[in-house]
Structure formats: structure tokens, C-alpha cells
Length: 75
Image (cartoon, rainbow, N blue to C red):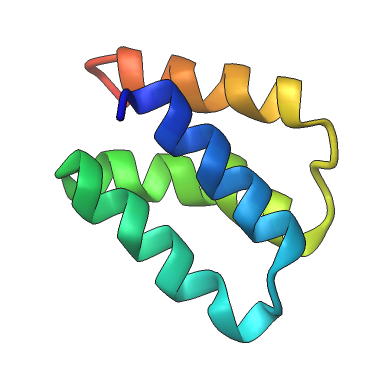
């Protein structure tokens, strides 16, 4: 599965899951992508956390932000 699909599946899972499942869903993505801490933090604070909290409801915008974070070597 490619990165885009993994991120999209994670975002849709977060929108449909109970809050008790959020950490497990996020960790699955982190593990599958083998992300360093800084990428995990950037994804959580900018995309995954807000999606889980319902503050970022537009999945297209969330996907764009997530892909930008993953592509940016400095984040």
C-alpha cells in the first residue's frame, strides 16, 4: 500500500472511530511508515490530532497537509 492510501485510510478511520481507538490508529500509521519522532509530532499536531478532534473535517485539506509534512525533510 502506498503512503497516500495509508494516510487516507488513517484519516477516515479517525473520523469513524471512538476516541479510545485514536492512539492505536495513529500508531499503526507511524509504524507502517517508520516515521521519526519529528514527523510523528508534525503529523499529530497539524493533521491527526485535529481530525480526531473534529477540528479539521475536510479530508482533502488534511491529506494535503499530511503529504506536505511527509515530503518536507525539515518537518
